[in-house]
Length: 198
Image (cartoon, rainbow, N blue to C red; front, side, top):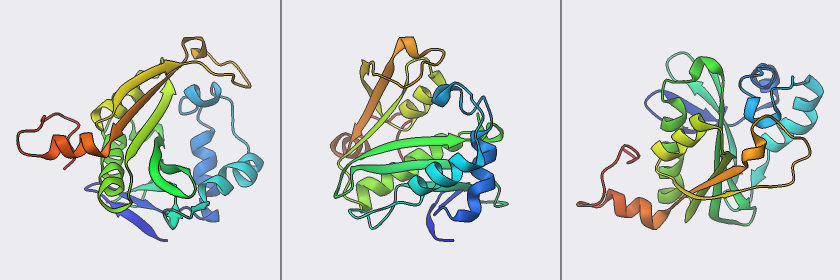
């Protein structure tokens, strides 16, 4: 399995067809999916025909994937996935950051750790100029991860969604971090904050 990057506690690697059971267990947890589809159960058919093709897609501008399986470095346990996907297949300038981790990984800082490492790689190796992330306005845990990873609130918005889920009436929020801002924070005398990437 191709490793994309490692952090102190995580390995991010390419997905394979063998991850179907991992993905089914992740997407079958109503708490994990609460802010995605209202907590509806997953099906193996959906994972096989819709989820996996998206996760296995290579982006020409990166020459690699946009979604990465997250494993615990110490024991190889599957924790979930991270998204670092170019919005335009042919340009690495703007990428979307996302994450979906199983409940056992919540509250341990894994989402922040993985997000910071991806941001660093994007700005130093992949030609990324702007990282963006969206979530439901009421998803306070995800918003906190975005803030700790260094992203700042940009706007609130509403969209036309196929199905209404609890909390969607409050809309969505967008966060972002530019390479210029990331570099400014890293310079001597720049703002030192919990979101500073190691």
